Image (tube, rainbow, N blue to C red; front, top):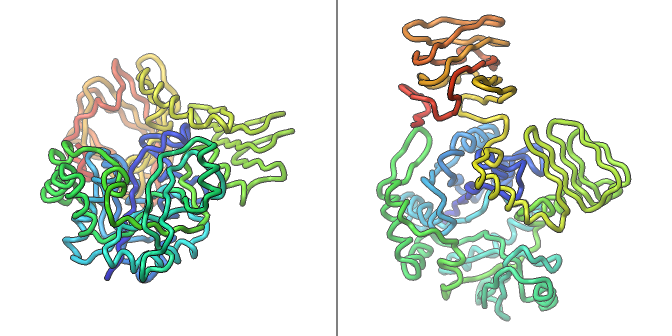
Length: 476
């Protein structure tokens, strides 16, 4: 029997705005260490020789960032499955199960979100080991977290009184409970039979698909068709877009776990958090980074008479005086100030940004691309200025614009420029001009990053004014 980690790296993490955004969500951010949450999730599995290489799932828009973060920590995945659109966890895990069964008819899936914190890795490993025998015997195992307090932000699982025969530490699930109010949560904690629902699972791929077919045949059929029509594109496996588009969106819990007769829970204490809000992140970091006043401070920060707060400065100096229980987060284009008891309201900010057709929920000032990144540094009527960085070997698409001209000035490095039928090298302090409607391309043939300044001018400067003729990254 082989165990395959399935890492769910989709999602937008709206409750951690303004740091987490659609183009760079929380699982791809270094929130708790100098590595991203995805990297931490992978590294806690890397020294576990019994496990097979991980299978990742993510959205199309994050594929290059996910691949690059894996490369940076020398983790080679089994594959990266791309979801054409977000459909929640039941369909995501179903297509992953189909992929694994194609490799191994007895595959066991260890399903893990990429954006969770697990402080006690040994306890996590021990919980998985306890779950293996139950999974081998056909159980769908979920991992319950022994509550440390009456948390109202998590769902709960009530276990049966007696352990599953032959599987010590594994209990039949009596019922799943939605997020309770404070009084009910206090009753659950006192009861000792309740665990937090972690959203982590262990089960045979074939068993999961059988249960999905029984309780949600529409999801099962759509996922079967989406996988049957899958194809490889560069280093990624793409599902059939049309079949996946009609698949109902539903979580594993609603689709399967609340209905199956084979649900089993393994209660465990492993220093777990889903980091679902700024207060949850403060709760995690105060144990290792908190000062004498239980403040968590990141960046260039000054405090005076401040208690139980998180202050995070990404770019500018931030000074805070005479407050308590606050979260203050500064980025280049937004500042959040919120009481820790009100952090669930951050999601409403994102909804308002979308409603008003703003962009602060989508991108940071620095936007990542497979070839490097760009950052807007100035803008006005009919012009904008960007700082562009191209990785060694990076190559932008051969493209043209209908509404804007561009001026490029090389700051450091060497640029290979294609402009119409002309091709030439530019070095430090050299420049070129790209007229409206002219095909052009920028690439870095050197071994060091290429930095340049781009000045755009024209009547329309949106990112959608791009006609691509050739792209090594196969973007549309």
